[in-house]
Structure formats: C-alpha cells, structure tokens
Length: 215
Image 1: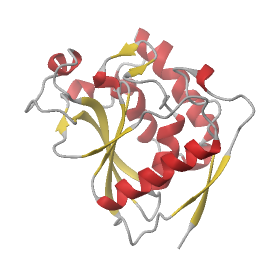
Image 2: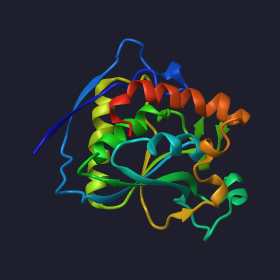
Image 3: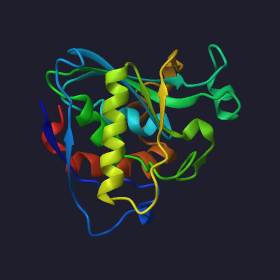
C-alpha cells in the first residue's frame, strides 16, 4: 500500500538556509511505509548535528515514547563525549527514538529529520564541524534502509535543495547512550547561551510548523 507524505522543507533548516530554494514550500512524495513493515514498538536512529538540538524536537511528537542522545557509527567501544568530540572515533552524535508506529510512521520521522537540520552540508551543522556532526540515518533493518533510500531519492528528484544531499545511510551496529547530563539537555539547561541562540529558534520554528503533531 502506498501513502502520500506532504513535506514542507522550507523554513526549518537553520544551519544553511541559503542552500534551499526559496520558492518551494512543500513536496509530494510517494512512500511505502506501512505498519506491517515496522512494528508498533519501533526504533529510529538519526544523526543531525549536535544531539542536544534534535533530541528535544523529537521528544515532543505524539507517538514518541522516549528519545535518547548517544553515539553510533564508529569503532571505539563505550566512547566518552570528549573522545567523540575529537572527531577521531568514527562515531556521530545521534538520537535514538522509541516510538509507536501506529501513531507516527518512520516516514513521518524522516520528514521531520530532513526539516530540522541541513542534509547538504558535509560533516557540519552551523558552527558545529566534524564527522561527529554528520547527517546520518542509522537504519535498524532493511525495511528502514529501503524507505530511507527512496525518501532521499524523492527529495533529490524534487529539487527542493540546491545542493546534493550528503546524508549517509549506515547500518546501526551498537548505540552507546551518552551520559545523563546530555539527556533532556534543552529542558535542563534552557537558559544557557547555546540553548537560547541555537536550539531555541529551531524548537520554536518546529513547534509552529508541526503543532498538529505535538503531544
């Protein structure tokens, strides 16, 4: 069964808005996301720059149970935040989303993922630079891989972005949960400078565009 997802790709990517065409506000895409393909107790793992930024966004969605910040995609076992920040571990800062696919689909999550970060900047989101900040979809199974491949191809074909999408598709091996102080970071440290000037604008734009999907 095919479903149609209308995605508004203008306005939420803050890191490099100049890479977007200003005349496109939504795109129609065909997807094959069904509840039979991904069970109701599902997981999704995305890397889109600093995990503090995207964790708070996905945690607000209906159907999302928990969101954990952590590391994946590298070779170092049990990496520390300091080690990952060196860019030498191969790991990316990622979030792992536990969700109910009867309430929100994997395609819905990908739509938001591509809206809240810039998938065209290689190993960079704004002033955060390094392979640890790469745009990445860490797929849990072949169904997720296929959905992601199709979705990226549809975005490329639409011409929504002026530049090529550099999001990597990587099979998830191990996910390492970050230390407690990284979890729910924005809500715990909202008055800090990074939260006020980097995270808050993203959150406010997200809430405005996706108010119907909020808890």
